[in-house]
Amino acid sequence: MADYKHRIVIVGGGFGGLAAAKALKGVDAEIVLIDRRNHHLFQPLLYQVATAALSPSEVAWPIRHLLRRQENVRVLMATVVGVDKDKHTVLLEDGSSEPYDTLILATGAQHAYFGNDQWEAFAPGLKTIEDATAIRRKLLLALEAAERETSPARRRALLTFAIIGAGPTGVEMAGAIVELGHASIKGQFNTIEPHDLRVVLIEGADRVLGNFKPELSTYTLRALEKMGVEVELGQVVSEIDADGVSFGEKRIETKTIIWAAGVAASPVAKWLGVEGDKAGRVKVEPDLSLPGYPEIFVIGDVASVLQDNGKPVPGVAPAAKQAGQHVARLLRQQLAGEGARPPFRYQHAGDLATIGKSSAVIDFGWTRLKGWFAWWVWGFAHIYFLVETRTRIFITMSWLWIYLTGQCSARLITHGMAPEKKPLDEVDEE
Ligand SMILES: Cc1cc2nc3c(=O)[nH]c(=O)nc-3n(C[C@H](O)[C@H](O)[C@H](O)COP(=O)(O)OP(=O)(O)OC[C@H]3O[C@@H](n4cnc5c(N)ncnc54)[C@H](O)[C@@H]3O)c2cc1C
Image 1 (cartoon, rainbow, N blue to C red):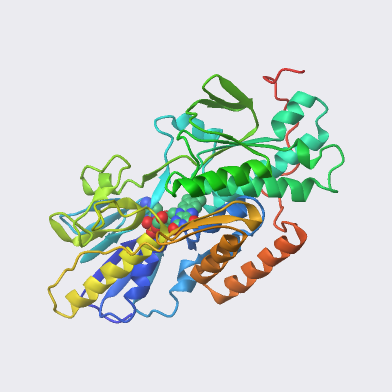
Image 2 (tube, helix red, strand yellow; image 1 turned 180 degrees about the vertical axis):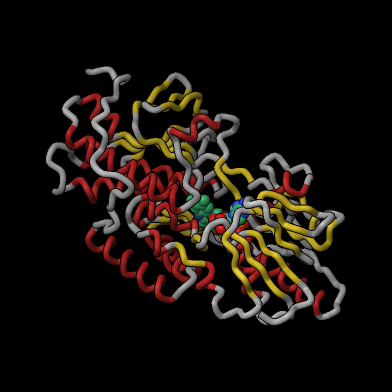
């Protein structure tokens, strides 16, 4: 690698970090991208891996491969555990460190259990490929165990799936589980029927998709109910254990609970020794730099910054991408000797969510779409934003196949063999 005078370290190869690295192509600086994983993940389609519609390699790509054409980029697989702002170094888990002239922190968010971290063992969230394949395994094993179960109460618990949180991920998971159950049970199992499946979506607010316009929430609620999803609104979960979930006066016996209720920023505020907002995000200047440290930028889900309308920039993929591109533009200007640092201006394209494989809701702000047409728009939008041509073709083919046949081809139980024959001791026989 050439001898560069400036070193830009980017931590995180997600939407924000990758966009920044790409937009810095050809600048006269060494760019070091550090990620604890070797792949960039397209999280918006992760629920399709969890529900066996897509395979992991259709939603994730090696970061090295994505940046292979950029001569000024080095990719390091390592976990960052801190930042020394005075020495201008990033501290790594193995005790080593990486020096920087400019630092871009883009480490995203993680699940938050609102002080009930013990729930994580029973109600995994969806954030990584491992989370998605673990949830897929849980879903498919529950069907296999139900096929062999002779107790009606235990079988009912095995065929009950609870999702906590009715934002886009919760809604998408609920619809996809119904469809997975129907597609895999029909004609392929002997003792269980598609109508035995029970999917319960639990939400603390009084409507699903709280960020969307109320008319789209109402439409989504009806569409979910039509699919057979039981939606419990205004219900705050009080307990989760190995055999079920409790809220209000109710208790649902289930072996499969999925957490889609909350996220918090990764611990960047702690690394920087600053106070985060209530979701742990770092409050940044309008140009996305850390107050008092113009050489440190914080972007994406881990940053807290307001739009011109006074509302916070949302924690969504386009916002992280645009932030990465904004910082890259500033750095290009800085390296070219220009001093201007314009503020970050986020352009919101719209909010999208699918409800099963043939319905969706989209709020563009200026117009709203719902139903079958919205689903096609959602599909095209996601294919457009995917990273590689190969993936675009593969996913289009997979979706067409599922659309025409109803069959999910990635129904593989990995990381283990037959389901444990472990009775649900706490479930009363009826
Ligand atoms: C299930 C799910 C569905 C979603 N659906 C949508 C959607 O439909 N539309 C939408 O716009 N947004 C969606 N989002 C949100 C969107 O994915 C995020 O807003 C976006 O990924 C944020 O980008 P980011 O760059 O800030 O972080 P990320 O994309 O999360 O990237 C963070 C990167 O940092 C790395 N990292 C973290 N900690 C460390 C560390 N200590 N050391 C080294 N590397 C580290 C991670 O490995 C990761 O690669 C969804 C999110 C999830 C979880």
